[in-house]
Length: 108
Image (cartoon, rainbow, N blue to C red; front, side, top):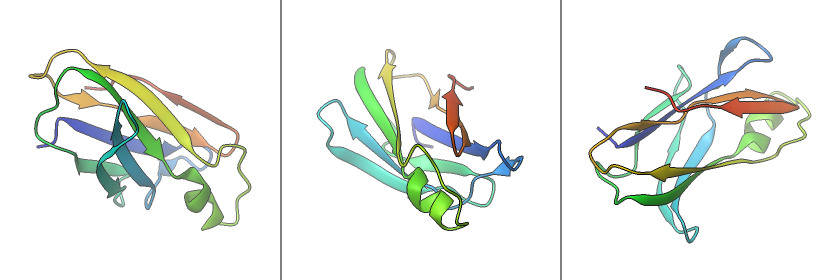
């Protein structure tokens, strides 16, 4: 299993956000892995099984997701920076999304 996973929920319609492209980057912005959310809004295999401690980023292509339903959005991309402190831990980074707001938290 990937050390980093994500789950995107579209809170404006109350369901998972399927088809959102996600990229895992290192601190320099280099792509480490890419994925697309499944029908349940999840990317279970995003990146390597292990990451070194340090800074990482998830970039979500929200423009394409909302464009697919002709929904205007204020945030064409959501970028979440996070820190891997322990190479042995799993990092689940969910995104709660709507066309004009978003929030996140450290999941389990």
